[in-house]
Length: 138
Image (tube, rainbow, N blue to C red; front, top):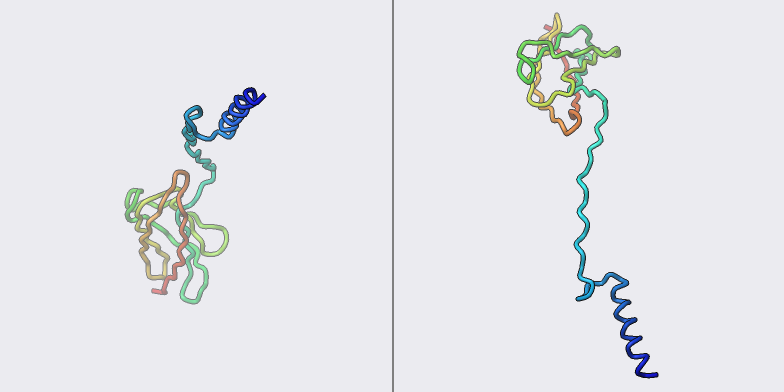
């Protein structure tokens, strides 16, 4: 009986080493599975690169300003497609734009201002910025 149990016990020990996937001469370590590349899920959302909140020195919101791109990814001197938001003195523009821009803000009766902004863009959208601008009376 002793001759019979010795090979059985040895076989069980050998199989138990294979069962836990431990590296051995019989079961060499397998390389880890390659991870698939990350998928980027972009949205259809349209983002404005720059929001300008425009007020006078007393904190009153200013409507009717003209905002022009002087330098940047749009031809110099062209309107930056800035839109007046229905509430207050808020203007949005440079939609999905990226790069360096110089913007001029003008309103009749006020001293104009120039603003430099650097807009960054990821794989999907621009990283929006907001600027609070105060215009002084001329």
